[in-house]
Length: 254
Length: 254
DNA sequence: ACGCCGTACCGTACAGTGTACGATCCAACC
DNA sequence: GGTTGGATCGTACACTGTACGGTACGGCGT
Image 1 (cartoon, chains in turn brown, green, orange, purple):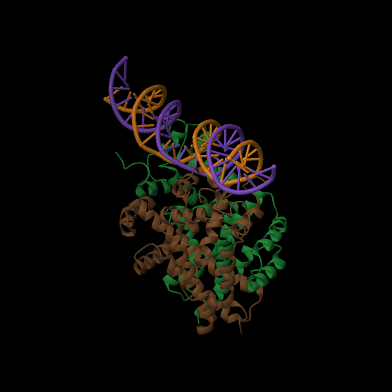
Image 2 (image 1 turned 30 degrees about the horizontal axis):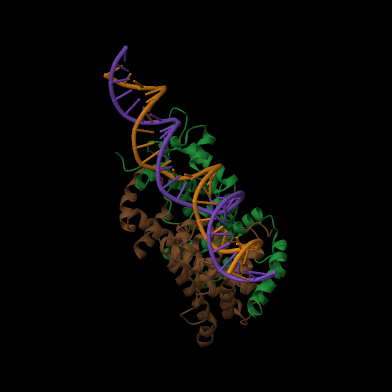
């Protein structure tokens, strides 16, 4: 009579650390929590989070949908397990922020964090669809956090400030990724490039606005349009924002 | 034979500006695009974006579900109309950023933008569930943009830089709001306060980790925990990040 | 070798979703 | 009075997460 499958945080922690939990060891079809999560991640990478339905994951594993519930409490928990799984791989084939910091300074270390997270989101676009809530307390997320704090440790910030800076940097990256991926998606589903879209919408907009004018918005909008050949370039904004943020942090260190 | 209802960007622009479009005028049941959008916003405010289904909106209006398609091309477009509608109200009962800037400087003007957007997201939590993509080119969003550019205009930044700064600031606010609202939601649905959650999860975590240690994460995590009585405080991080970002921008002006 | 039992497995069912299609009905114009 | 064009909407389809209850199998005690 363990708590109703879904909704027991302690059970999830067990599964995350794969230490215990009813689904840690393979059952008679060779299934295991790890295999379920791996297949779900692959599916999400290829077709998006919406394609990760219990039925499709089960199909890919050659079992019935309800069999998954032996290894995973429910879909929500499956998604958390997926997040922890991919978080573990963020720094896999590349320098650790700590090493970059030692070679090139704390700022370079933070920029390594930015690049790694940017690449991470683009590699697993579905990660931006999961609304952040309580932290996922698994080994992947935790060790990622540990690695990312390193460049900011011992440079003269309080522990609270360290957290604020990291959280702000990741916020900027996450927001830009959300935006970029969102644009990519509508482009894919409307089959319209940015230019084609503007050519359709621009005239309609002019007609619809009927005389109302927005001088600042128009000036800035067209400056941006000329610079990046699109309505916006989230990555560019994000990198500018990160640099200014780090300027501000650097000024604090004196 | 107008293009298939959904998927025609020009039609949407028309509806946004309420200038033309088949649904601009009320039909024989007194329905209009504006009424559909208003009801949808109310529903979303009260029960979240997931409650905004065509059937429920139609019920609230006393018509059949399919009648909505006369006034709105589809659910996706309805959501964009909702976003534009609420964007128009962001600065309704409060100072405009331009006026704040004139009274107290550009920095105060930007902070007014921060406060207004923060309040906006908390008032309409469903806004964080809409992934940003191509800009919503309606009167609400456009005039909001126009107002928010004002504090940054003419202080020595290029047009491109102005856009980067505003976009970064809004990114920080949006990220913090997403986070705060996410936490609020799990709290509501699990009926567990932060403290209760930690008391359940903490021991399980210690047991599951089985000796692995994360010195930095633990040190910073507990410093944060003591300071804010929770695993994190997104608003605090966001405000710190904004201040440092603006420090960085200020340093550029010289 | 045999029987039993816990649990892995899964078929079915339910209350929902967005919207395509085609039928119906009504207001206004000739 | 007749006709037409558009507003209205009933039905249908393919799909979702998961509760419930039944089946069948691996490993154990004897």
